Image: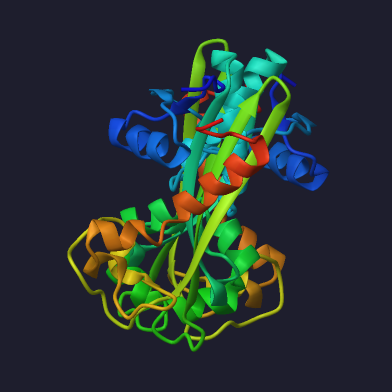
Length: 187
Length: 187
């Protein structure tokens, strides 16, 4: 094992910390913090602000992640507000809002905010897809029944965990982070 | 003239400060501050958080206001996020999203956050109305062309400023504030 920066992931979810450790190739710690959710459409803005706030509190390298759901015809809405759409109208209501759309394209983007004493960086991974006409599938959670990734004819909610993880926005964001920060699990 | 608390309205808009002074019945100062927009559906939460933050900065009685646009069939969405809907899909896009709705009811709510050394209070004024089928009118701004207040057959954008001000959410919120804080312009 080689030395690596001691990064703390801000989450109360141990499963998410395990997934990030696997994607990064080394173990990271995790800790729950109540961070401000700034109002922004772009998850990069949300993740960047949260990383800065977490660094200010913990004074050590930190990372946070956020995922947004951006409908092309709606100029990026709901974006970082997807949780509010799910909470109010849910996936069925979102599809009704989208009923008349000709362009049914969607970008799902994970943004990782990373902050250390040299400042904040944000890394993103995006998977493009489409809104189906109806909700399909029972796996997963959140927007999974209304997202069909490009190159597939199934929604995320119709895929096994392995199929879905192979198309991971999170993995793409982590890959960008590893390249930029020159993180390496093996020397 | 009687003494009254020296309240500072947080806004860079002198016209808004004049309107509040008129509604309150006494002059208030105003000052621009960059306050955090917390992520919340309910404008009361947004206005309360901003008032607390402004008080922490200025250490004097402060008030802030925020207005939300809540579609009944969408369980309150867009609410405090109305500015993001206008920025991305605008009024025409919002009506398209609402095209299939049977219940076209909307609440427009102004929340005033007030903070002093004893804490934060939030006062609200709501006007109920409906979404028209098409945008109508050219007066005003924001959601005005897509809001028909109850008891009228015109949108806010088809009314004169006087007609619209007679149905003021802001006035209703100020009246609640005056009652609760026992603010009085005449003794």
